[in-house]
Image (cartoon, rainbow, N blue to C red; front, side, top):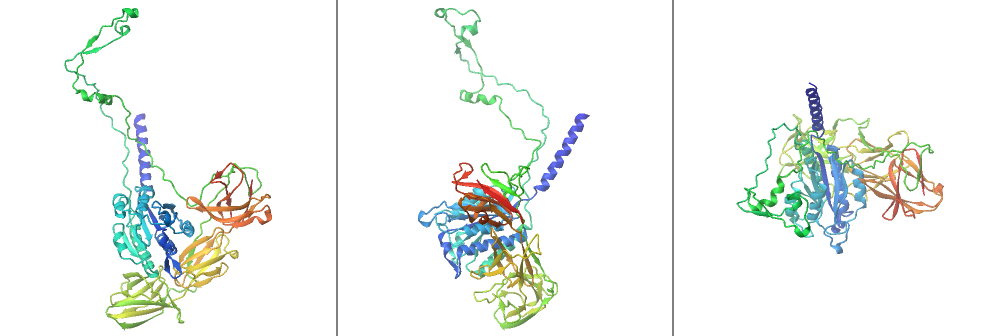
Length: 626
């Protein structure tokens, strides 16, 4: 009875665990690898004020931002080729995964892109091989996709299609994309085996490519990919064990002479050596095996047998996070908030920095009513639609928001497109069927037109009166305190030298567009946002903490490093001159490293001494380097 009860309890626990594990590990985690061209040709101009590598960086950030809006759990990684060795070296193995897969790593991506420089050749096939073998390592738990951004083809003689066929196709779950920064038709054929080829030779094409990729990812991410079922471990059923009979060895009638020492054969007193004359003993042995199989007879012996486990657990996956988690500091009666640094380095309390958010709210005076519109028509061979945005006072905008053409009666979507413009800001025509419609403008759709009529065989020009978006900065834990310490550089994506410097104490209106924002915090805070018509955007900034280096001895220049993916990256230099009053600076909350060259033999990495410390908002951390 007791045995039956124990078996029942065991079965219940096992089944409960199996169900829980299945729900938790039911679907694959989506991952997207950005494969970026870092060859020397990427320094060429893309627009008069922007080179190709800078444009590629903007496209990467735009793609990440668009995908995060669909699913903020998607994990991104960055692999670059041609950026570590110059052209004269012709290094066809120049590729490196600069950022490992992790989610919510937009800032890490932007910081790393800012520090990379194109300089070498293009080993694309080798880079794809490295990605397949070293980056796409777990296709059971993860659904991989790839986006290649380049301005050319293979320059090292590699066979891209062969790598795709033999290695990459087996690892890819979502369709790969190739974004080309040049208009060169032969490239399309070269990349036909890899994925969908998209031209981004000018800003309007880049916008279209980003919109298409984001839309296609929206469709595939809406349907999670189930993991293949693991074979359930079961208890082996009792089986009858048949007795094992060693096969009888039968040798054809042949006599084998075996010499047996007298002490074993006779068990008698040994005779003197001179008198020993052992007689050969004749033994008959029979076998049914041919002589050439004698060497395999050891397989009939006992060997280790691996039985399936009837209780198993899911192997934990390595989680990559931007911040480094350190052991908690042991309790000690030390002065508050003082960290004394000396080899060996003390344990410190490390908490991840406060996550900065971009909040979007409709202003109090913004009424979501139908926008004022007007329409003019010009005879044309086909029916088309051009959309113009204006402030109603003569100012026209070159914004490129997503738009939807809705049926006036049913509200159903007839067409979805991005409003793009040419180099002069004139909107590109969209081919649409004639009829009565409503235009929905922007990702939020808060701007809608009244009924508009699209006439057949006409170029229908619709002008929409819109209002700008507003950008606001504040401290997330102290919204009433003005952000006096910092200034933001706000630049329209794809438009170099369009920077506007906004003190973070001010609220400013901007033409709806995508903006690259850099805030002069330490380390620098980088954000990318889409400003919609009539919306107010608030960027929350964590309040900084104060770091004081209390050294009275001059160490010279030291460098500060912050987390970048699963590693640390240098972001600032400061001078330790022996004057504590001049050795302080404000840092954003988080974990940091200080690197300096000294005479201490311990803790040296690459000739430098390294120690970690942490910073909290509105608190002072004292660091003494000994």
